[in-house]
Image (tube, rainbow, N blue to C red; front, top):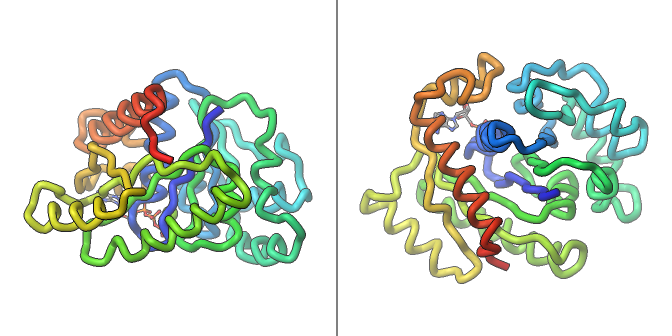
Length: 253
Ligand SMILES: Nc1ncnc2c1ncn2[C@@H]1O[C@H](COP(=O)(O)OP(=O)(O)OP(=O)(O)O)[C@@H](O)[C@H]1O
Ligand SMILES: [Mg+2]
């Protein structure tokens, strides 16, 4: 089982879009996939067409519900849904000893091939739980100026987690979303990022595509909603790149 967190403390960079469609791409390749929505906005839960009023990940983390009570089985993947009240659960999780390990403990012994975690746009204890449970993390990023400032915070947090809580965690890559790396500005941003030896950038980037926005509104993956779209082609390529990296163990420490 490989656990992958999709994380960026900046809002609206494409975390949910990536979680959902990367999960769908892996499921299309016959992998057994679990998606986890760790965001009180519940965007992934809604995109998956699952009600946000049922049992949820917050209850699982605090031991108020078991895995089998919370998990929702959909066509092609399973989901641990979020809930609007997740922030108050995060607050309560904070007050418990060793609370960073709650998610990893709940994933122990599960027989999924891939677990994809959609993180909230913050670096609080829910994101810490995600990173402690993960083998890899992916950082979707829009290429605007100073995007890399937030990246330092993520890399500092993951370095601490690697030292103290989870030596396995590795950066799978930064994923450019809605951004053309081939422009002069794109190259400048890329160069700035590559000055940090810890950084790896996916060759695949996700182009702007209105079908990506529409598909989530219709609670469908991009492959079901618009299989011939640019979005479907980009996420399929991303999935191949990730599987190749994982196979070749090239993912950086
Ligand atoms: N490549 C793209 N082309 C077109 N629309 C996109 C693309 N990527 C994301 N979007 C749209 O941009 C919005 C933000 O994307 P998304 O919800 O995936 O970001 P997020 O990082 O999960 O946001 P938050 O931080 O609020 O959780 C959504 O409406 C989504 O449909
Ligand atoms: Mg989101």
